[in-house]
Image: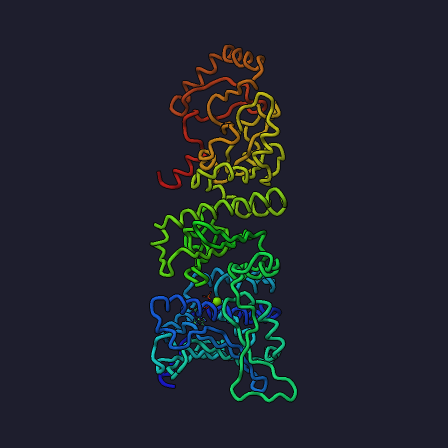
Length: 562
Ligand code: ADP
Ligand code: MG
């Protein structure tokens, strides 16, 4: 080894290491899942790069991950022949956590060990989990295509710093040697390791191997023989009948970094003009970064089983960005790039089909498991509301998925569908009424509602920033238009009693002088002052002209600087 250098961990990395070691103590085995997952990513990356540069395989095309241990020495080794790392990459990827996820991760720690351990995958800080079981981690790595002399040895005891040195490494890829702590020695055990690999890594698409077991008299061969412990077939390529619910759930956790089971999934093979397989999942919980602009979204794209890219966003619309899954195409070229995806008409028709499939999955949940769907709505409802504006073709389907708080239930829970509303409409009612406000209480106590309460007409209570905007795009449901109760003179049409009309006329007449005076005083503030029967308890209320932007929309525009 040459050129040994010492480097300090970034402050956050240090903090993270300590947290990791202490908070994940009761769920130690996940370190193996994380390291195998990294090795599998490294294999995917190599396969992808090798598409345009075959020589990267260096005459060793059979990608695999090997796990071995030495109980006497107390070490555990994870060895892959994937892409490997250069010295700079090892420094950047293993030493400094420049990723924004880290401080976010620390903020999100709950103190609940089970929950915290699950956060680790989600925030992409998996490598450090090695320190849960090891008091020293040695990484030997060499980038595919680099000279043997350009190998790298990274080493750390998980305290303040790490060492990095250059070393000779003939085989490409990464070997990670864990020197187990006393409490980690339980993992230097054949049976234990095999069962963890089965549990977490069955669906990993390349073999995760361990040395073959030799029993009794059998002579151990000189060069060790390896066998695959996991299934190593791409799960989505199997037929639905062959895959158990548990396998789908584990697979979902692998691709999403979520720790909960998905709410539902849909696995389909499409044949005909286009051939592809898709496996889509509806998560139960939103990731922490659902509303971040740079948040990852989209599907994992494979072409004929070869991994092409994560976050292929061309296959689903934005308002379905919470859907996770895999799409494997037989038609796209292996050299496909994001730019090409954007222009390919085949991708468009796949996107249409996958959008329908996702919406169907959601409607099925809404119909068959309304309690589960309610949770999904609570998590993703405001994202779905982007749907009518983005995807006019599927407006109707989306409209059926919407849930609202209304004057019917009087609670802030958004649990009423438009179909529910329509079924309760009064005889002669033509429109769907809504009120927009900053928050639920203001909406609920809006003076505009008084006449509706009196007449027993239901009103949607809208309190999301985007509500007025999305209702404008929705435009109608089931042939009924949406009416803002705070707008215009409020023509209740057939719902209006003759006596109401008369009362209004009389009130205008008797209060003529008063109305004129108020109008004169408020001349700069309002356009007109009218007597109304829409109020029961309040003395006065403000309304917006029919053709003007509603109050909420105005605020939205103002906030956007317009
Ligand atoms: P994530 O996998 O979410 O990126 P990790 O902490 O698990 O986060 O890994 C950090 C980075 O270290 C990876 O993104 C990758 O660049 C690099 N890395 C880790 N393990 C390997 C490996 N076996 N081969 C190549 N690169 C690796
Ligand atoms: Mg990882």
